[in-house]
Structure formats: C-alpha cells, structure tokens
Length: 158
Image 1 (spheres, rainbow, N blue to C red):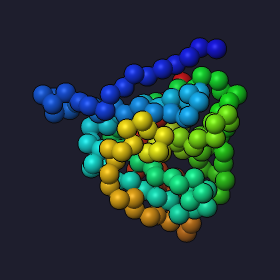
Image 2: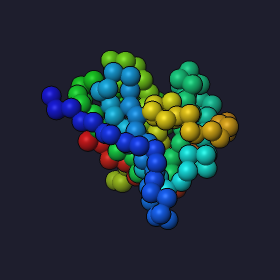
Image 3: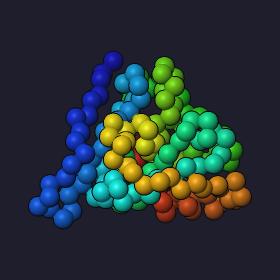
C-alpha cells in the first residue's frame, strides 16, 4: 500500500492577496487525509450544523468554499465507506477502521463537489464561527443538487 501524506500549515503568505490558506486533517487512524485550500480566513467561513439525524449523531460541523478546493487522499480504498441515505445525492465519507466522518461528496455530478467536516481538520479550533443550524428536509432532489453545486467546493479524491 502506498501512503499519502500532506504536510500542511494553516497560514498564507501575507504579501500575496490571492494566497491560499491550507488546512490539513483526516480520520483518526490516518487512512483518509484531507487538504482544504481556501483564500478565506477560517474566522470568515460559515460553519453549518445540518439538523438531519446523521449529522446530529456525528456532531457534524461542515464548511465549504465554492472558490476553494478539497483533496481527499485515501491510503486503502477498502477501508473507506461511502454511506448514502435520504435522496442519495451524496456520499458521506467515513473511515471503516476508526469511524470518523470526514467529508461529503456529490454522487451524481460530473464535476464532484464537497463539504469538509471541521472536526476532521487538524486546526479545527481556528474555525470560530458559531455553527448555523440548517435543515434541508424539505428540499427536492433538484433543489438539493443545485444548492450543492452553488455552495460546495470542487473536490479530488486520490
């Protein structure tokens, strides 16, 4: 098996206006590694607390930057669980070994989009915005897909 690691600092070059802040993280056992890149300061990023049963039970706090990017590196694909429920429009990425929920990725889009779970980031304490409770139960399938295309970020899974 090939291990993929990211050495990431949550800092940007202050002399550059377009510098990307990078935030690393992943699951507890290291099978799934994350790299979230954004021009936004963590204190500016809206944190959402979905009110569905799945997210409540996981204590989920999710973020995304439509102009940012998420890279998910998986050491052993067999240890990655892609859970789907409800309208089945996203894969919820969970490590089969340690059980950590790290991200959600659109499942029916030619250009996948994602949210990252703040609790899975190494520098989670920098994301200080009070979570906004959101409830998507009344959304239609089309409305949900459109919202995710607009608000979630590009993702690459390695």
